[in-house]
Image 1 (spheres, rainbow, N blue to C red):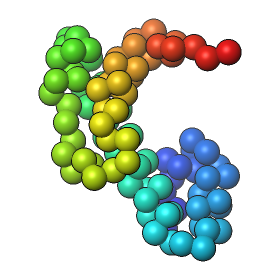
Image 2: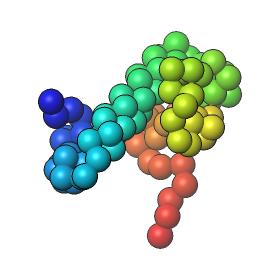
Image 3: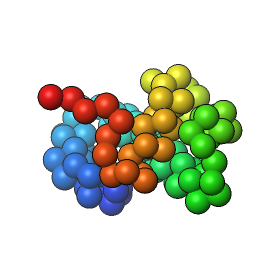
Image 4: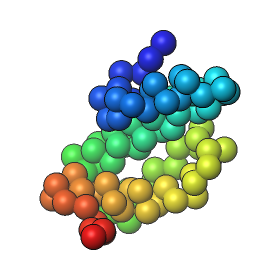
Length: 95
């Protein structure tokens, strides 16, 4: 089964993962896609409730993903999404 969100975000990613020698990597990509989808939804809901970025960062934990690589960056992701969603601009612009 191909995750539709991955195909929308990066069409070549599903093919790259499927062509990999290890199927576990593909399953991992699906897991990360779900984590990002869940965090995006949680931030959207928090913004709709009028929470500021610190309140969101303190309350959004998603322990089911705590074993994922870079999970410890969740606070930064919440800050970045809290800035991106209302403004449409990234928090840190790279050249």
